[in-house]
Amino acid sequence: MPSSGDVHHMNFITKLFTKERKLKIDFCEKNLDRFLPKELQNEYSTFLSKKNIEFKEYNCQSRCEECKISPYAIVNGKFIAASDSRQLLDKFKQLERDEK
Image (cartoon, rainbow, N blue to C red; front, side):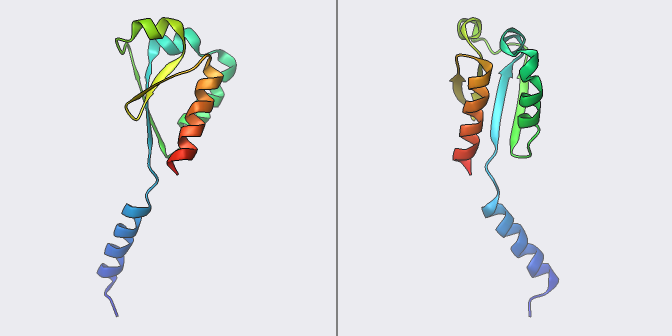
């Protein structure tokens, strides 16, 4: 019979391999100010508070041309833009589903 130390070790290994992949989302503060309407803020907040989502806001990401045109974020290192903030949130949700 394995000792309790072995069981703990096995659980750790199991958790390591079954761990959900996280979405890391980087936002430009100026872009959010420009494109995120008040009526969507709660939906964004709810999505971003999920345990498999990590996000950061940066004052500027030096993507000024894209920033002026449409809402965007850098998701797991990839530039993601959308026609509006609703579509951007939908893209986040699709990426989250794809990660599972």
